[in-house]
Length: 211
Image (cartoon, rainbow, N blue to C red; front, side, top):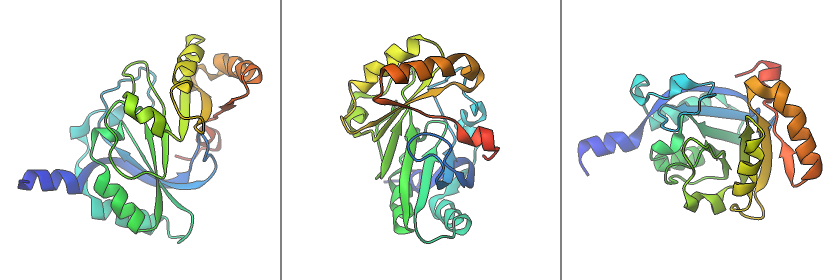
């Protein structure tokens, strides 16, 4: 392994990090420390963090520093959750990051499209597949949570396609795309009433005005 490989493994491009409440999915409402990594090649047209897409715009930060900041901002010793998101976090090797977070007492959660190979040790995998770049088949049975963003009616069929491929214990969520929420929310409600294996995921953080 050369010096550049070591640097790549021990440092990651961080767009931002912050201590807040998880706003979406199964762990909604829980305190969580978010680490948003730079870089994404999925390209969702409705992405609300497009500034995360270009990896080179976000200087690499040593993993030890990333984890120390997490410890400083999330001082409570119990029930620590660190959520790795993006961008697309699996564009990077997350092995050392998750190792150090576990050593610091964090449960590690990831929010991913699944379009890149899985790396790292995860306590919770939230898979949010995108039509723009489909998830790799090998990640599907590992997902703890399937979260499908609904932009139009065709997304229900898309959601069922992946619900049939994840494990039977995987939690199933439908979430309205924020700019279309007024239109698609009633559709989601009716769909869940007819298909109660699904649950509604609301972007709580946008209503209570936290990051």
